[in-house]
Image 1 (cartoon, rainbow, N blue to C red):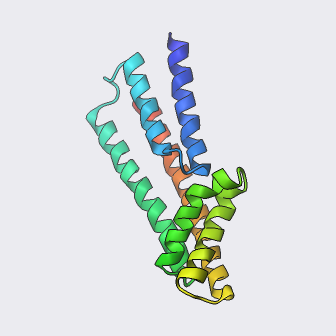
Image 2 (cartoon, helix red, strand yellow):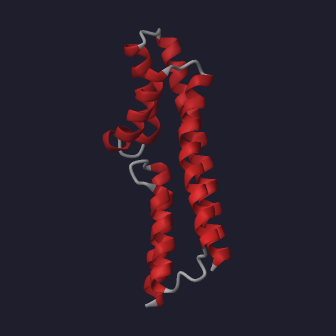
Image 3 (cartoon, one colour):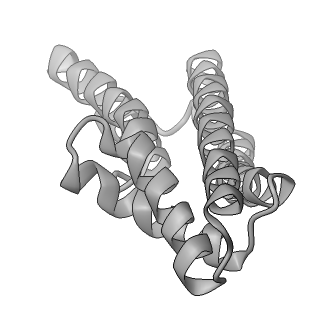
Length: 159
């Protein structure tokens, strides 16, 4: 039974990291599921309230980092709210429309469409904002990946 528990925990963590690439998967939720599976199969005793407090703060930090990285990337490259919304929609739809490349092309095309059609910017400005969305996306993925690794390290320290 112990082996099954660890397999489920590891699968939860792996799905959490897959969620960095496919944003439709709530990555941090799968990390929390891994922690809960540990508690259910073994014991919640090692997972003190300090552990849960720290992990919840990291969850909030993950959501903040995700939003801020995209916002800063688009704003720094001259984008508007239309580009931000287009990038977000492209991030969600992209992996479904173009399975592997959609994670990169979706936000890029979404931001470009948002800037080009909604705000009536010229093509060069729309592309610049789209590049900003990519910079924000890549910054967000790296930041979230590091934070998720730290969350898992804290879990293993706690147990």
